[in-house]
Every structure is written in C-alpha cells, then in structure tokens.
Image (tube, rainbow, N blue to C red):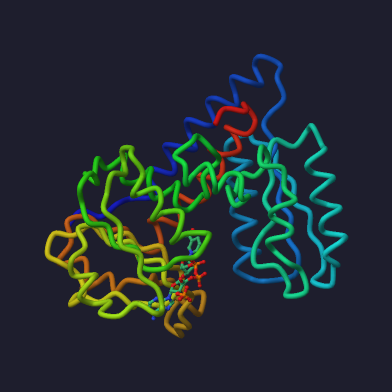
Amino acid sequence: MKRIDGKAIATQIKNDIKTEVAALIDNEQPAPHLAAVIVGEDPASQTYISSKDKACKEVGITSSIYRYPANLSEEELLEVVDFLNNDDDVSGFIVQLPLPEHIDANKVIQRISPEKDVDGFHPQNMGKLVMGLPSLLPATPYGIMLLLEKYKIETSGKHCVVLGRSNIVGTPVSLLMSRKASPGDATVTICHSRTKNLKEICLQADILIAAIGQPNFVTADMVKEGAVVIDVGIHRIPDEKAEKGYHITGDVDFENVSKKTSFITPVPGGVGAMTIAALLLNTMKAFKKDF
Ligand code: NDP
C-alpha cells in the first residue's frame, strides 16, 4: 500500500506559486487577489475560510474576506457579487457554501463572473468541463486529478467508481475521469443513494473515489485487492481522548481498506490538503486569464 501524501504535493504546488508571485512583485506587478464571501457562522466553512486565508498569506496572494451575518438578504449578497465582479483588483473570488436557506445558491453562483469563478461552479465553467474545454475546474476534483497525475497512477481504460453525485465533487470528478485526457480516459460508474448493489459495483473498481458524506462507509469487503482509493470525505468525530475533543475521519475505513489497496489517500492529509492548493492554482489562472 502506498499512502498518497496530499499535504506534500500541496506544499510543492504552494512553493511553485510563491516563486511565481514573488517574480510578479519583483517586476512591479500587482499580486493576484483572492476574495472570499462568507454568510453566517457555519464552523466547517469558517475553518475552510481561515485555511484559505493562511494559504494565501504563505504564497503572497492577497486575501480578503467579506463576512456577513446569516440574515443577509439574497439581494444584498447579489450586490456583493456584483461589486467583486467589477473590482479590477480582485482576480477571483468564492462564495462559501452552504448558504443560509433563504438564499438561492444557484442564483448566486450564476451571478459570479465565469472569469472570476475560482470555485469552478458557474454553469459556463461546468459546461466547458463537460465539453473538455479549458476552464476553471472545481477545486476538490481538480486536486484529485493532480494527485493522480503526480503519483503517475494509470487511469486510462480503468474502471473508476465514484460514490456521490454532488455538483461540487461527485459529478465533476466523474466527468474529469471520463474525459479524453490524462489523467482521464477511465470508464466511470457514478453511484448515489438510489444505487442498487453498491457493494458489487465498488468491488469492480480499479479506482474508487468516495465522496458520499458518510463516515467510514467504505469497508474492506467493498474494495478489490490492489485498487486505488481516493477518500474525499471529511468528518469530525467526537473523541474524548483527542486533544481537540474530536478526530477527523473520511468516508473510508482507512485502517482496514488500506491493507488491500495499491494507493490510498489518508484523511486528513489527502484530498483536503489539495483543495486549497487547487484553489490557489485557479486564482493564478484567473489572474493570468490563462484557462
Ligand atoms: P453531498 O452530501 O452533497 O453529496 C453526497 C452524495 O453521496 C450524494 O450524491 C448522495 O446521493 C450520496 N450518498 C449519500 N449517502 C449515500 C449512501 N448511503 N449510498 C449511496 N450514496 C449515498 O456531499 P459532497 O459531495 O458535498 O461531499 C461529500 C463528502 O466530501 C463530505 O464528507 C464532505 O465533507 C467532503 N468534502 C470534502 C472536501 C475536501 O476538500 N476534501 C470538499 C468538499 C466536500 P443522492 O444524490 O442520491 O442524495
């Protein structure tokens, strides 16, 4: 079993970005600027936004955070989006999901300028992804593709089973894995809550990508010997023995599944570490208008 070290790859990517940003500044150009909009107090979102802010500072990308209370109206949020779309100083921005229930997330996403949509969720970017055209890719699927590429994991002709069909992870990663590209060229099966014989399908997977949102859902009896397993899930499990009062686990029972795999991502330190690195890469692309 080889453990895929997302943290190490993310560090390499961040170091490369840091060098590139330093060169821009040496040439008296402005630093790229990533803005984030957060509405409400969702703890996981707060953590993600803080990590993003820290990562930007590490590499020299300007970071700004627009924080609003949960009672911000949809109209007010759309005005913030318009403001950021029109601010030439901002290279790209994200509106942190989930949004409070009274705000239609799809309406907000569609208002973001596709050129500044560093989360890659705008229908124009999603449409380009479907057509195999260059675009800003959603950060988590992009991070997964980078891990497969860096570890030289063969995907062509392999059977890839994706657990989950969300717009953020499952659907875009399925599309990327089936694209005529490298990594890609896989035969993809997407599973969701209505899938029958889930275990039998998982057992056929050469590459299993779990983005299901259920802690330790994928057990060793669901995984073929020698499979590659990518665990997207992130869960805080209350744990009195842990210093923070919880530990982090994924959608995969790592301890037992890892004994059967050729490659596997740990949680934490796997896909999660790559998501922010991919977001920074997207910010560089948006800054250079290179996608
Ligand atoms: P969603 O809840 O949006 O989607 C979960 C998907 O899994 C749905 O398609 C759902 O099916 C399917 N599903 C849920 N339960 C079952 C089941 N018992 N059997 C089969 N399918 C099931 O989650 P996300 O895609 O947003 O996130 C997935 C996981 O990844 C979460 O743990 C999340 O925290 C994590 N995550 C991690 C990121 C990272 O940076 N590492 C980034 C984003 C998410 P249906 O469509 O039928 O409801």
